[in-house]
Image 1 (cartoon, rainbow, N blue to C red):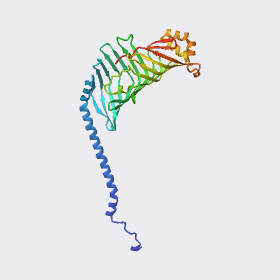
Image 2 (spheres, rainbow, N blue to C red; image 1 turned 120 degrees about the horizontal axis):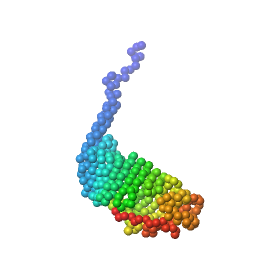
Image 3 (spheres, rainbow, N blue to C red; image 1 turned 180 degrees about the vertical axis):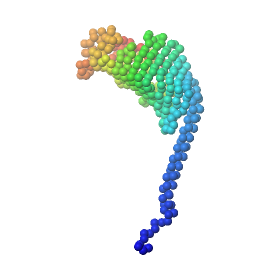
Image 4 (cartoon, rainbow, N blue to C red; image 1 turned 30 degrees about the horizontal axis):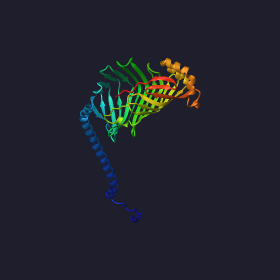
Length: 348
């Protein structure tokens, strides 16, 4: 082979290294930029957390000016890298206005760094609530967590969910001690324009004082009550109208009661309204009522033909009755059958 037959040289070694080093330098600079950004973010997070730690006593002092004293034992700021929140070993809240004191276990809160208005929290039991008039309440649970979205002037929406919960309440104004337990419960509240939406749900609730329920749910709207979630508000249902979209109790031993309609609360706390009550498995419902109010059960049996005639939706089935429920100044009745008196809503 002659020299003319040889392939031309693609370049000197230095030129080839120059051609390949440009992408390598870009990778190095990119990696260096990532390291610098991470270092700045880490430093910023810890600086912010440190300042929050220093300001916690001042934040608790703000609540004390509003009559609420908060104590967070061994408070610390945690959550690095993408969250930030307050952890407490023990929690104590004192309400000066009502002279009540609440004690609970460890509190853990967290918010995403990019969305600090949305706070999730978890509280360990047990919790106790005591008052100077002899009130003594206690609750415990397997799991209790909450989610809260804050607005500029208070809370936008909030939810609470617990599992395997027990509660007991006693006091001088209660004839006996109330106790109850539930396998699961959930509560939700949110602003809806000028109104306030409420939802409540329990599963497998039992108490010696009430009928055991397999499932209970409440879906309601309180008209013109969005201000209840504003900072410093004192919610007062008097003078408000409650729209019951649905309130349903499914009893553990059979029977379902479903209630819906509008309920107006007067200034004196007494309720009035025209509602619809639906009884599924009518005989089972009557049996459940007889367990707690035998006299009322006797009246229901005596007026059974009249109640059947008042059925506003007779096509629902032979075991389902839908009846008009009238409440006037706290007195409830179905037709000419009196059901009893609803106590007034107390002032806050």
